[in-house]
Length: 475
Image (cartoon, rainbow, N blue to C red; front, side, top):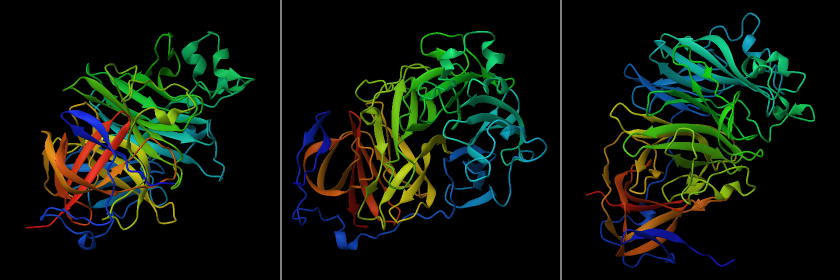
């Protein structure tokens, strides 16, 4: 198959497709550029593993929680210490004691143990408590969302209640709180041939809490199955406020936002931007394994309950071609300065740093032949198009410059177009010559994970994200 390089760039404020060929050698590189053979290679190593990471900043410390009972802390987002890692210490003190109420419905998983996934710590000012929302699960649909509370972000936390159930059959529904919510209303919509209709209704995992423009608390959740859903929470209790039934609104599960038909969409996280009035919904696509095509997409809406649209103005339902929906922020990629390609980024969340910068944290796998993963923190940049892009390189604590004014591009850039595929394909950087006739809306000058000085341009067109990296000589 003939090699083709498609690069979207800004020209007079309009994104155009240019067909630039990657030369075998750089003939007109500017004098400040680093030649390929001098680019240092290496991957950031944080030394901890946390799946589905979420970060909260409290009392001068960053706290990271995720799946499998992981809780860690850091003063600088670079050096992390475990508080709990599941096997050595559990930070929910009563989870495995007494009647084990958090597992009484789901039971044990296929390996004979108990699954605790995707913890999200949120400080509830009304309660004056740190609320840990997490899920227990035993099958691909049988799960619960639960709540534990603590006086400190470090814990220990005390399990208090189970909020929501999924995967129940007609016979099992009575052991959940379904009828406490819907009363004597017809329950047939939840079942198909007596079993749970997971084509329409969610798997109750991956909770994430946020505050809307009016100060209301919301929880987004869901994985595969019927898609991503949302419920308002009562700040006095931290428990769901179940809505009245209407179009796309179920009294038990709440508001349907995106997805359905058991497509590979999960791990949603929501954030509100008061500057432009948009709610941003981030989700992971694909299978979470190294070669499963895992990746991060974004949608946005002017309302916390939608509709949520992508770069083409589309709203994702249960369409078979779900990979055509959502702005793909990051997937599998390789750059000259990486020792191994990065693969299967996902399980993302968003947080604000001590200096009021917006960052995304997610777990990252590698082209190393194993499923080992580590958390990665990347700065988020809002373009004039009101779409977010991630800086290509992980946070390293160093100062950087950001230009949001158009800048002419000249010299040699290694360009990665993340495309819209959901696959194990690694998008490898293509060397592309810029002659100064094209400009970009966002330029970041920083250092990469191997301490190379770099200039990066960042672009979003339709549903594709494009990065360009120029490696610079140090003065």
